[in-house]
Length: 177
Image (cartoon, rainbow, N blue to C red):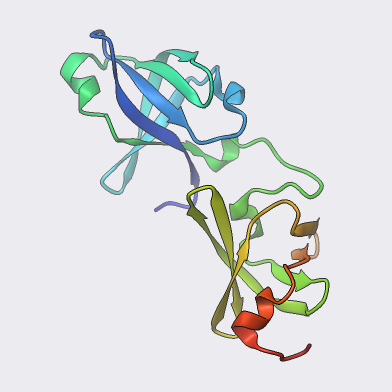
């Protein structure tokens, strides 16, 4: 995978007979993508640009899209393809809001335990994303929910959290308690 792109969604099924496709937009704000001009589809290990002729939002995270120069069977062949956009297309976030990719490498500081390690990754499991923290080679898994994240220090590259009681102890025992 290329770290210069972010996952936007998935082509789920054809719509009609003119090459239109249903897409699922994996975002809390699909309206921000109502005027997309192009997306990238991952084909093998390459991101291939597809120009959008028309896009119509259909409600909760779905849209109908028509790609330029893609019709009939060519459109059907794209079903189950993942949609990507360059990271540069993401609007900057401020305050305690962040994109997962921007805090990878940040020190994670718990309000009780202090520094617990480095944010290594995020795992998207159904409706519950999980932050993976590297604590001296041991992985600590912390639910990535708003209530846990208290402060994002972008300048100091630190992510301040309040982990649920006892969660960190499961991974590293009573050290530093």
